[in-house]
Image 1 (cartoon, rainbow, N blue to C red):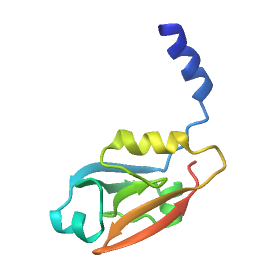
Image 2: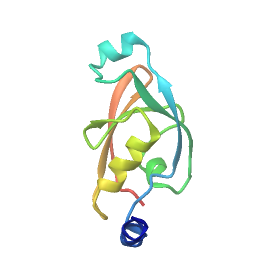
Image 3: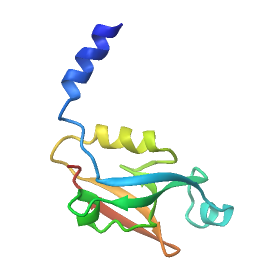
Image 4: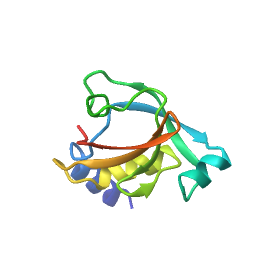
Amino acid sequence: PAHVVMAFLAYVDGRVGHLGIEITPLRLPWSYRERFRLPVPAGLVVTDTLPEGPAHQAGVLLGDVIVEAGGRPVSAPHRLRNEIALTPPGHDIRLRVIRGGEIHELSLRPG
């Protein structure tokens, strides 16, 4: 029902953080999936970062491919948004990214 949705939106307003990035889904080569033991064949390539955003400050770079957030695979933008929404305000979220053929782990606090 609409009243439940409106109540939920009122509750989360201002509580759901952001990373300050733009992302695009990317299908990963089978070799990457095998090499990094990824459960899904896709990730999210970072196409832009806000200079003062949490991701930029934590070291996320253009071209990084986000493959996990909060310990869960993220192969679509809504999955990343869900993980951010599940992160309590004031807490960090861990990202696993592929950069230059290597896995990097970053910790950042959604804004």
